[in-house]
Image (cartoon, rainbow, N blue to C red; front, side, top):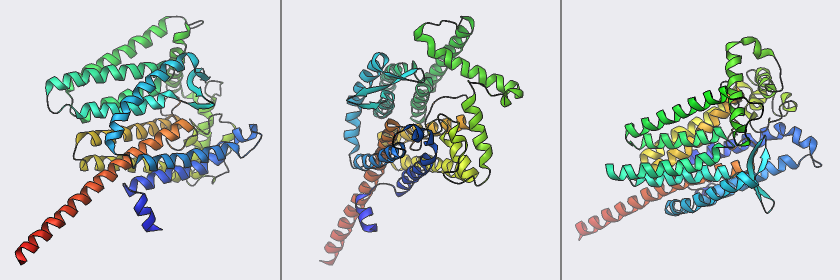
Amino acid sequence: MGAILKKYLKGDAVLWVVFVGLCLISAVEMFSASSTLAFKASNHTAPMLKHVAFLVFGAFIAFIVHLIPSKFIRFGSYLLMLLSIVTLVVVQFKGETTNDAARWLSIGGFQFQPSELGKLSLIVVASDLISRIKNSSVIEDKIFIWLMILSAIVCVLILKENFSTAALLFGVIWIMMFIANISWKKLSVVIVVLLSTVIVGYLALSIFPTEKPPKVFERTYTWKNRIDRFVLEKDDNTNKYVFTDENLQVQNGRIAIARGGFIGLMPGNSIQRDFLSQAYSDFIYAIIIEELGMVGGIIVIMLYMVLLFRAGSIAKKSKTVFPAILVMGLTLMIVLQAFINMAVSTSLIPVTGQPLPMISRGGTSILTTSIYFGILLGITRQINDDKQKEADELDVVILEDDEEEFT
């Protein structure tokens, strides 16, 4: 059995362990967290079986992708970006609304989030562009302009319906440029412009009335209200104990965490799952702590931390810029999104709507994250293959030298 796994499951073993570990936690916790969906369904096992099916299909996708050479990933990313931009435009007009935001596109009965395609394609394209700089200030200027244009197009299209996703994606691209040693002056200008825009936008929303905002700006008022409620609660501790329609999710999340204690109530014994409408997505981490306790919560954090440190090690081993930057970009997207989700569940930041990668319910998110892991594993496979090839060539040279010396 071990020989079969070694033959077909190539790539870094630690990454495989992290991937499988997240899938197992997801399957166990989703069995409990999706109870509200099970009660509504005619078949109570349908939501759970559907989620497990996505996990299994995601593992299959990760396996297939990890066998694809990076040069095909590199070329295909531009086609994927074109597709993602088209679908992001279409979803603005034909998208299905969830939580007052049109984020889903349905084609042939299959629903997916175009923003997930946009995230994946932009990170790979950015890695390719950054790898072409080659220590030239002229080339760097051109690459930087193209990066800003493509990032602006994708992020602005995502921004209207999902501010946190757009901000997270642009943040990852900025960090990738920072890692690649792009001029600090350029990166500073970007930060100043963005901060100025956010501050001016927040002040503008505070000045103009909110009774009947223009439809195009409806979501911006939602973002502002979430921030205001979060800040107000921090300033006045009495608000922490008041239940309202706006903070119902947050309050039940806190109760779930408080119930968890050190070892939790054990899987399947969650109480707050029946009160958290997003127990299976935005607040899944609160359910994990309620059932698995602080121990389970730390294990989940450690899985993402292991992934991050392993990615740094893989990037150092890469001989070229493209795989090194790509590994860091994809890993940062997974890990930062995970920390944002956990920060929301523990009331450290305002509610954002970010799922917990590979654990929260959501077909598009699971499949896209599986592609991330597939690409990471594919890069480690190629590194290992190159090392093996070099070792074989060295053995041949040594053997030839020995034969010449013998003759």
